[in-house]
Image (cartoon, rainbow, N blue to C red):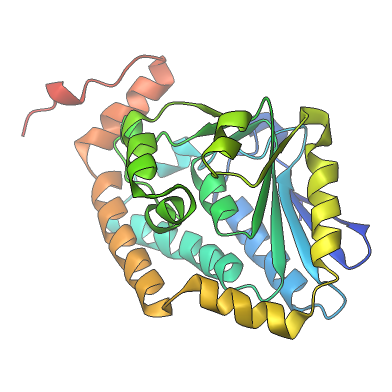
Length: 259
């Protein structure tokens, strides 16, 4: 899997790192496919009792690969959402513990996947970004459910509307992440926590996690509505302006869009 780096850094721990450093580990279709294959392999391997998710070269991920979102047909946009939701379900419904090493930049889709994991370790220098509204998009990958579950609805609403960078210590203070450590200790701390979780009784853990997920019908309803909303955004003028502003490194002029 050329877009991933995979190893076992501790007994019974499977580590999956996005390996696309030239794009700040941005998630495109190839990365999604590789992640689906890797998580499926990890969850079906009887030796593996915990998973660490992260990225290479000190960054989790810049989020979804923006250029790959531009100019899609409706069918392509729907397929893109379905593909991402397959990965979301895999992580959300995992019967073993998943720990995220949120090093460096942790943005968009990668934050969505992190929030579907069980434990998140950030560094003091970690920068967490929810840039969706700035781009003319809605939060996806389950974020409109998982973020309020983490930080509470008022804080989640503020984070999404303001779309400001959140540093590691602040993220820990508001419970967006579970631990904030020195930047050079993030990966080691995530591996150590996964190794600790690997000693838990798996049957009991899987039952607890199923209860935490809540009523699966609610989660499925969220994903269905999220896909419908995001397809509208992908095909609309606001995303065209948001992407143009991103490329030109300027604020988006959504007020100037007519109609």
